Length: 77
Image (tube, rainbow, N blue to C red; front, side, top):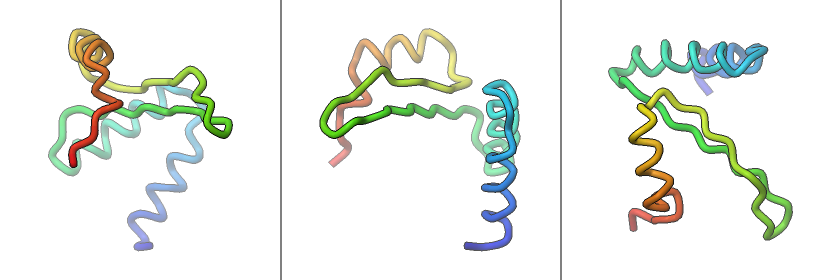
């Protein structure tokens, strides 16, 4: 792991709120030339999937289409 990734990882671990995590993530992805990010966290207990959590800066209409189209369940291969 490079020093860059190590610093980045430690910085995210120090976030104390979802808003701070979003702000820090947006700053980081903009450094790489991206405008948007979409994280989906899906807690699992064995084969049981519980309610998921989405953290994103995409517009709500995009997120709605993503959810309605079940795009998280589709594979690219």
